[in-house]
Amino acid sequence: MRSVALLALAVATCFDAVAGSPGVDEDVSPLDYDLGDTAVFSQNARRGLVTVVFANLAYLEQGLIQNMLCSWGRIPYPHYVLVAVDEAASAGVAKLSPGQTHWHPPYWRGIGSGLLRPTNQKTPEYVAFIHKRTRFVEALLLLTNLDVLLCDADTVFFRDPLADGTVPFWDPDSDRCDAFVVNSAHRGGKGPDRVEPLGGFIAVRNNARSRLWYRTWTAMEACLQSKEQPAMHASLRVLDARFARAYQYRADLEYQVYAATQPVLCVLHDAHYPTGFHMTDGYLKDYPDTSYITLGHASIPEKTNKQPWMAELGWWFLGPDGQCPAPRGGGGAVAAPRPSKKKLEPSVKHLAVVHWKREGPDGRDCTRIIAERVPGLKLQVADALAKREQRRQQQHEAAAARNSSEGDSARESLGQYQLPLALTVVMILFARMFRLHRYCLS
Image 1 (cartoon, one colour):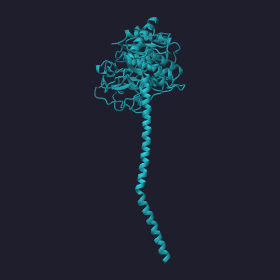
Image 2: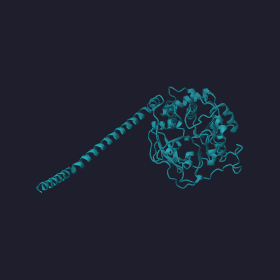
Image 3: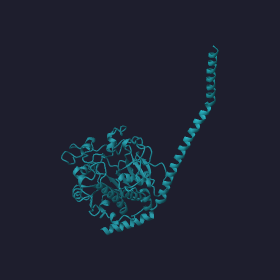
């Protein structure tokens, strides 16, 4: 089976080389793309799209996987595969969802079963897991012709996002979207003025542009040694990605993109896809009706136990016994109704990435390194860097001209008052001399 996977990878690599999308670079072994038997993904796909969730034992012990499956059972939403990342988790997910699990031990060698990320800070174990997770999706895109919807284990579904239209994946007007993403740029007071895609929910279309994006993303993760989001944002800037809004049940594509290497990411509306921060910081005050919510993502700093916080939001569906109640009883939450189709205001104004990281831990410029290693990007990145340097020079020259202009204005203003000031001084001196003369005469 491994030889079949590697042969498929070779074919995909050759195809991508022709299509302008990269295959495996010199520092990546083909074994890193060996996923074993991938038939389970095709068997559980709907119209060529499969939902993928990665699970380790800690996610099962916390009840996150069970809670997510409970939310899916209420819709129902059966088109998914649970990917186990450790041996203990493989037995647990196989018991929960027979026929809908994937476990390939060689790929996940070295990944532990404990809590990989106890705080919001990265750990070596978590970084290793994240790098393998991103490369897994990249390999799945290369080895199959499937589209992929990636979900974190702490997400809950209130409706089928593909059926209710909030992810217009199959809408003919949205076929230019290479991926649909959730935004989180409001956090930390940044406001909804920029795009900061989350890594916990991505619906990606399998094409040359998305494969190029994932190849650049995984290369950035290796160079930056970072979590998924900094590397994701850096890869989007390297590729000069384009963004569009997707909030009126179709994508609002207001421009044409001609470059074959520029992926288009369509940003979903926060009212449909809120994170924990959206729900607690008042950001959704304009949408108090929670029936808008299609999916909730418990992205919060507290990683050790999310259950109480999710229960407070109404996102914990399991009963006290840890079992999933019947949809209409037993104390569990009932799936929200279909959202109102009244027009929503855009939840993101300016379609550009918030910030991005360039240097790795050893000070290397990862942007230039990726440009050298990923075919088709060298000239594009060099042009982007040249344009950025040109903008900096223009800003410097504008500031210098502004300072010079302000100095000239000050001198001109002073010149206007020089004659009146001189006359005033002369008159004061004359008046004092006249008073002195009178005093002497008296």
